[in-house]
Amino acid sequence: MLPRRRCPFCRRWFHPHPRLKQRQKTCGRPDCRHKHKQKSNQEWRTENPDYFRGVYALQKEKYGTRFDYRRCYRQQHPRLRAAQRGFRPKMARAAEIVACKFHKP
Image (tube, rainbow, N blue to C red; front, top):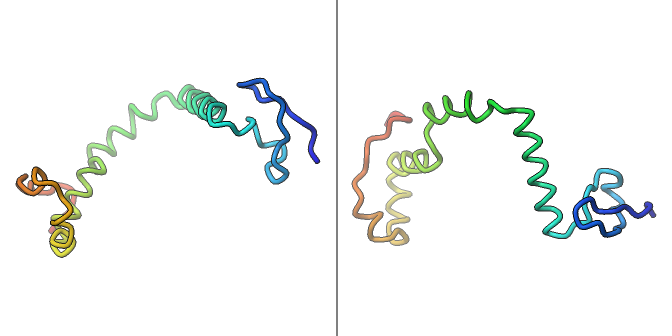
C-alpha cells in the first residue's frame, strides 16, 4: 500500500489509488477535483497567453462555431432533418434556413 498523502486543497489525508500512484494530486472529492482543475487551467493559460487571441480566432472565423457546423450539416442532410422535425421546437421550425458559408452543397 502506498503511503498516505495530504490533499493540497482540503488538507485531509488520503491513500492514493494503486494504479495512479504518485500522479494522484487530490483526495478525489468533487470540490478538490474542481479546485485542481481550475488551478491547472490557470497554469496552462499563463503558459499559453496568446492561444485564444491568435490561432483560435482565425479558426473560429474560418470554420465557425459548433452551432454553425451543425446547422450546415442539417441543411446538407435533409433526411436527417426530416427525421428530427418532430423533436424540434416550433421556433426552430419557423426559422428560415440560411445559406451555409462553410460547406459546399
